[in-house]
Each structure stands twice: as structure tokens, then as C-alpha cells.
Amino acid sequence: MLNWQQTLINGSYNWTYYAENRNWENIVVLDNVDIVKAFIEEFEKVIQSHEKIYDVSSKQKMDIGINLNEYLTTDYTFQAKKEEQKGNDMAVAKIYTEILRLNNKQPEIQKARMAVVQKINSQRFEACPFEIGINFKNGYAMAIPAFAPLPITVKRKGNTPINNATSLQITIQKYDYIHQNILQFTMDNLKIAPADTPKIEHTITIDQNGIMTVLCEELNGYGRTKTMRVDIKGFQWNKTEIDITHNWRKTRQQVTAPTQKAGFRVPKTVLWLMEVSFFKLSFVVKDPPFG
Image: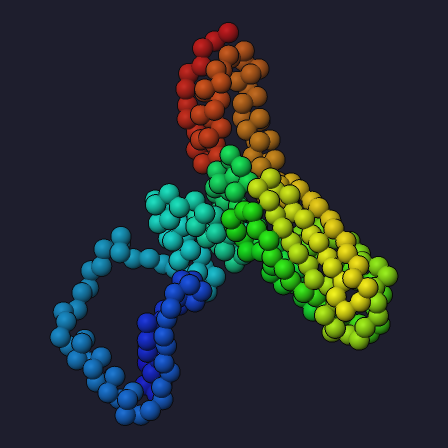
């Protein structure tokens, strides 16, 4: 990339999610006049040695917009479709989560994410469908990454937020694409210490039944401990996803109500087809037998 014929940006890096977050990329920014000039001359040679194309097929055009989030969302979506074709459900779920972190007002992506999460954990709770972190005074810190295989155990330390504190509030949060408290409790009667003294070691364990155990041990003090447990399966869906499911079911009931009033007898197989098709915003029409 040449910027006003004064700056050269060169390397393998491109403005995509994978380049920014996952790939090993390189990028060099130069403002040396001679080097910039040499690149310009070489670029002109490339242009002159190729025939100009005036008619580009519409299939080859892709309007990703100028908005960065839209650009990254497009990049994510392509990657999700590719992983879906491979049958890599875990990767698909991670990508959908990243899309929703860019913009969580996307009902279709939310539904798609819910479906793949249900598929992953249909037999047993194999992966935690959201990130788990600790909300310290200076902000949120991730402890367990989203979709980490279970069981898993991690340890994180926390410092005293103020001088001579004798109690500390522990807040454990989930983060899929919305932060939500899932566990909050207090450790009391701690030995006083200056601010920023390492004070609590958190040991967080999640088993394959979806039970999260948080063991907090006092450091540099009396050695007090406290253990709390919570079933995180109940936190798989946030309020937005629950509302989407509720609205979808309510609408489906309104659609099927006229059929029931008319005295139609609809087999379970037909209802199942209608349910799946409605989820995809289309319908499968079958003639049910009359009662």
C-alpha cells in the first residue's frame, strides 16, 4: 500500500480477522523516498504489462462496505461457512461468537450460534459455551476461554483493591458476547494488607456435568478459604437469546393456530418439518389429513 506516494506499507498482513488475531503476519511501514519511488515504478510496470478489464462479472463483486465491523463480519462469516463444510462445529461456534461481539443485534447469527452450541453439548457438556472471567476492581480478566474442552481447571490471583481491607467481593462473570454475573460472594475476616497486595488465589474448575467450582484461598494472611459451586448449564443462553427463542415459538403458535381451529389433524412429522423450516425463515407446506 502506498499512501500519498510518501509512505509504503508492505508485508503479508491484510485487514481481516484472521490476519489480526490468528495468523503469523508481517508488516513494514517505510517512508524512505528512494524505496517508495522504487515500489511506485514497479507497480506502474505491473499495470502496463496487463490488459485492463472493463467488464467484471457480478459474481466476482463483493460489497463489504467501508465499516470495519461489517468488513470483519463478512470475513468471519466466510470462515464460519468454510468450517461448517468441514464439520468443525467448535470452530463455527467460536466464529459466530466473535461476530456477535462485533454486533450483537443479529438475530440470525444468534440463532445459528444457539443451534451449533446445542449440537456440541447434545450428549454431554463437552465445552463451556462462553468465556469465564473474574471482575476485579481494575476491570474484567479472562480465566477460561470460550469453548474450552472440559473438564478444565485454572488458577488466577487477585490483589487487595484498597488499603487495610478486611473483606473482598468475588465476582465471576460469563462472557459470550454479553457480560453477565454468574456467581458473586464475599470473603470476610481477612488479614489487612496494603493495596495491590496479592490476596486471593482463585481456583476455577468446570467438570463435564457443567458444574463450576470456585475455590478462593487467602494469601499473605490467615489462610482462609471459601468454596462456591454453580451449575453453568443454566447460563448457556443470555436474555437476548431466550427472548429470540420465546418470540419464535410464540409466532409459530400463532401460525399453527388457524390449522388447529379448522380441525386439521397434523402428524408430528409435519409439525417437525414446519418447526425446522420456520427456524430458517421459510415454510414446508404439506396437506394434512382432515379430521
